[in-house]
Length: 162
Image 1 (cartoon, rainbow, N blue to C red):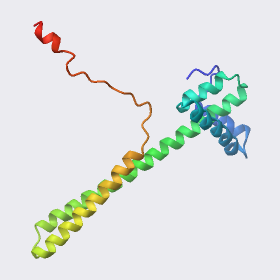
Image 2 (cartoon, one colour):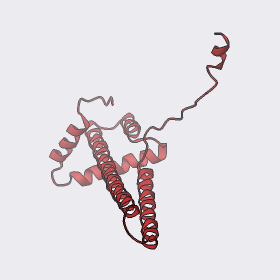
Image 3 (cartoon, rainbow, N blue to C red):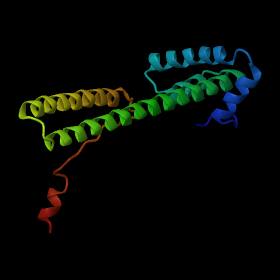
Image 4 (spheres, one colour):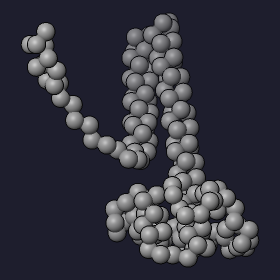
């Protein structure tokens, strides 16, 4: 990101904490609001919204605070994704446990009625966990998604020339 000054986002964040030792969080929250407003108004991602703010002719100290806010937002998103991924892994582990219990039930000496009831229970639990996993996967934002156009017949004309 070309900003016109030579600070990284983490350095800007540390400067904000040093300059505002007691109110850095509220100062960054003000900048976050501005960034989110720019994102919404211009339908931009975070970094282009920050660049839009820089292009508006801001003071260097406010641009550093905005860069600190960008860092804070990105860190929050990274931690949120990590938490979601951990939740998915936990649900998958539970799903595997139910699968193992299902297999054990099939090879057990239980009556057919008990096996049927337990089979239904294990399958329902696995389906419920899968729905939860699918919901968590859908909650992860995809950044910079690009549309791909696949033309399967693009090389057909070359086949005739061989």
